[in-house]
Length: 376
Image (cartoon, rainbow, N blue to C red; front, side, top):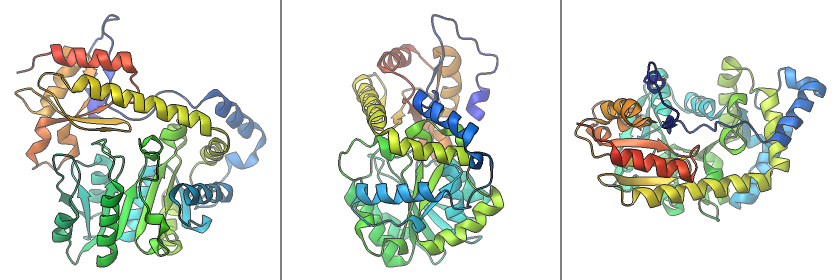
């Protein structure tokens, strides 16, 4: 919201329109076949206008359980799946179910700022977990930061804001750490559909006792462009979902029915279309890597799914540089200061570029504008 206010009063001539690489949400509506199907649901499915089960439509929960079991080579039951009003709500419900006021949660930095904001609003203590130059956290470092108040470790892969895909063996190490210490490992896989790997990104669901430790979060917003319909998911033990159900019932009662119906239709009919979307995102990722590999002064720290995380060459902090780039380069991106604690100076050198809504031509233009601008 703060970054959007930077656009107030700014003008962008036709020959240099704004390049908005600040947000990862799709800007296009769902594909036309889905829109037509959802229109029919509005007309003919009375349930699309009513309250539904707090934990979601049974048919959608069943489909997710079946798809996840196949994709991860493990066993997920429908009763271990909850549908939420977007993945942000899934995170909020999970934290409220796992933690009590004053408890601690380990969160790798740079972090997704909504995660940080919710922890603060929920009265929880965010324990920053530093990452290396490759933007990957260290399980041994995490182990040293665990206290008697720690309740969970959160990982986001592919990462927001860093773009990096966490190696399967690294995710496994964090899982084993959480299991040994009696913690929950919360793995946010909002961008799993755009992971570059052909194999499963981790093998945690193959463990028979995964529900004791693992909580997985997911979003349909990116897969099927259902951002406005607020449809996400949480996969966890039945006991944890029973606690999360109290939160969900209090906050929104249930996720919107039309979004859930649309998500189910997408899972049943849009596999090939989604594969094409993934291929396009991977191509745009390749374009980012090509153009930023030799962009003077800029350094690509991480790139994947929807995001590139970069170091900038300017002699001023990223929050000031990002504001000036709007008017001096016609580029809206987010400063690294938004993704780190206020006392973490590393954010002043970093920026996040959400490239998913920019094609190859736009990415080339972005690189040209950033190469040409001088900020001091």
